Image (cartoon, rainbow, N blue to C red):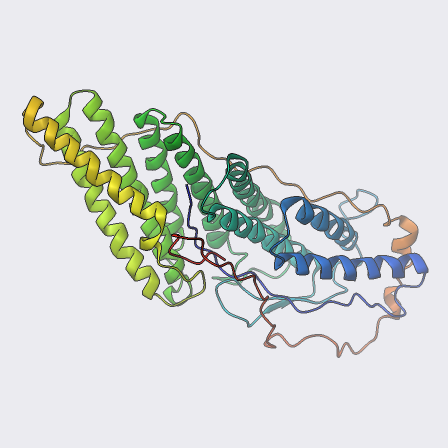
Length: 411
């Protein structure tokens, strides 16, 4: 089963040379700086390389972050911060607020910003795989795992590293709690979509599918509500996606709940459940149109033309017709005026983020290497410091052509 996921753009960043002429006083210190520059450049290249896979990404991130930790961690395990933490200025744009970057002279800002992009890459990798027409079981597992890994990275950044920033996070920016929370919950919801597709394919109990769909709809609703206080100019398109997915999975929940009721000879209630499913599906269809017309960062798509969307429409129609036929021939039950209350709890298949930790300090960082950085040799007038309002070029993300029948473009 193909899937369609909305994706915001990657963060862009200004080049960093790590050239500390005069400050790095030994070949070992100079080598660490060269390795940092090369590994950062390589990691940024992989973000937009459509042939990159999770193994390549992990190797590149482990190398860069293990080197960057030398600017953050104390080598003697003391609570004292590293003397190099504030030596370099870093600039990063925002996924929602265009190409005007935030700048901080703080290695922790680089750690969390690059980490954020790594998490985004995992979501985009999952999106590319999930949009394939004939996705294999192994590919579906990769999608599921990648989304859980992304959620784990976002969660780790929020809990362990963003609080260490000296400069408070600006409201509405990527590193703010509202946005991080929405990304985490969206990743969990999308991973559960893969679980639901698998449960449907294997013809699992309709009650389990209804419960998973209901939990997934609630996840999307929670992510949407978290963004409700953000400027709609930036978050409007993203919120349309979250809202339409919430309605879509409520339609799924009522559809499969109807099948459960029919199996229990509650045909009248089953019809009412399917009618409610139709309502949510119509609402999702309207939101699909609004999503396509809403300007803002993110994927350009026509989700109502996507295979996953059309399949549910047919399923609701066919199931409702079956219930009405059987009620007319066998049950003759009255259809309730009120829709059944969904009090469904999934006992299986719920997604939790994969725990994430940054790699240990690179072996090239020794007390001798750190001591070889002489901060008294820094230029007094730091004219190389970037201007905060200077534009940073966006990353050229790979254009992924829509698969046959997908009705959308996945980035």
